[in-house]
Length: 354
Image (tube, rainbow, N blue to C red; front, top):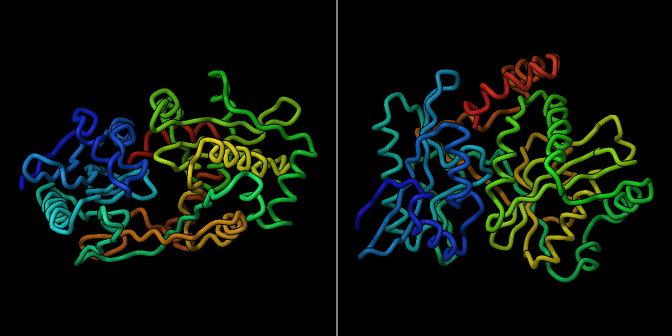
């Protein structure tokens, strides 16, 4: 039962297997993995397991070599979840053992991070043995059962439904991007959002690449919420395999009274329903962010735990507590620096924090 290391975007069998597996996500596609590897300059260590010439499991895997944050093996940077998908327990076990061995062979790799349990074709999850398990993150998904009216009624009446109506009444309109300059408007909002949270922005080239390369499956779309012809909020969503992922957002906090995010999210949910998607994915949320958790809970969502696993047993870099001294010092510094500096520094350091 051979194992091989591949670049998924050069092996057509990878996407064929991903398309056939009921547990596959956006983050398993070769398009996404190539984006992560190229933008972050990570070497692909992705694993394929075969039996009698047929693929029985795959595991996205890259090496993050960083003098700033340390060397590590990850499944997968910039991905909310990413784990081995396999036909059976034996294939899953071999993939995981090889991933752990890879960490041992990579000079100075401090740990291996697996974002989610191993997922089998029959629907079972396999918890990896010998890993530390962190439950710092959860996900929120909207089941898209029924038509738009049925889904709309699952939202909290006052906190969401009335607020969507309020935004429209105040003159907020939402449209899908139709021209390149819309990305400039989105990125300006995104940078301001990141600075408000004290987090370095990812480079504009990331979003240019997403919108340029993800045109079929996965398919990325940019939406803008506008007021009096000026963008006040923006959202990039990516559709894959019946799921719409709300991936990147920005909002003008000086126009908070417009509640523009509400009609913006609702428009993308409506479009997901019309496209026949079964789920709308709000993305991961840290457990120590009660405000954001509450916001997502009010949209008729189902909460899904996102366990991360680390070998050797410890919490890795992706799990950063907001009350830690390092986090507070880091975010305070970014909030105070000029916007141009934050963009320039973000371009240089973002790959180290994937």
